[in-house]
Length: 413
Ligand code: GLU
Image (cartoon, rainbow, N blue to C red; front, side, top):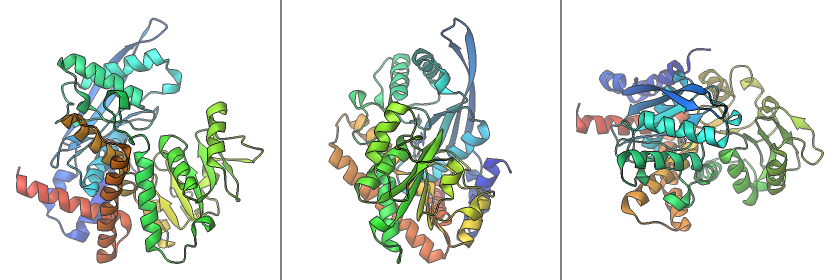
């Protein structure tokens, strides 16, 4: 497989050809503004020092401060962080919120760390990047395996360094210290709003109870998406986590699956159902597949075996370009990550606004504003898709690149 970032930039080139943008602007968007790599020495519980490598890629800030999560995962590498930072730039522009894009990460298996080690790693990361982040510079947030607690440590360490309470340096915080109500479920709820919009545009899909949905990933995003869709009356027939999955063609009771996961640590071995693998889940005879975990899970090897008519990308980058071409050829509709999972960063924006204004909103207001913002983004993308006769990803990129190029041209270099 080609390097991930190369594939990402090919996608950008494809879009720019359609909307005929100038070469110079394309050149600016094809590379990150800044890449920062820092060594993070952490005192481990056994008294020894372990040095981790921390990354932050500040991709583009033409529309506002760099914005994007920090990922703690063993597979984190610079190529991946660059790709994720690029996608954040596109995502914030599609959502039309006043941010650029960035991303951070550490290659670490958090399951092997104690709470104390995790806290010391987070504080080391914050010290390492303190000169580069800030409410008007670069605002991190949670991503894979980073939690509100980790954001709280980051906010605390940064506030100590600066000598003033600075909640707006990071979003996705616990509500007790300036987090927004509704931030924890925002990515999933935003995805659900997009999903219902997509269904309203498609004929012949059948009613809610006839539609079967398989969700890959039962972390914050996948789990909440499954719960929201289940309570809205959709049939979730399969879910999975890093240890494997379960399938019931009759539909799963997601509340029960959740309490099973909370006691057993995984969704597998639920109620006498047969376990399936993560690969099998994607190939099930379902109407909708929701990849809500890691990148490249839908690839050349399995694209031909995927039967779903809709792929709702709740994780970042789940579909490789080769797989996308094969799926589009089969007539599947791929709802791209930069739109489908933008609810998270949209409510991050609301959190940041609340922090800067010191005035906090009710959950109803957060959710109503999320719906408005994400539906507006969807409509714009759908229009671009119909207007250009292109797929939804190219349409979303078109909307984003036009906004970025406009901002570039009015600001100048
Ligand atoms: N990590 C999330 C994403 O990929 C949220 C980023 C944010 O809120 O800044 O969209």
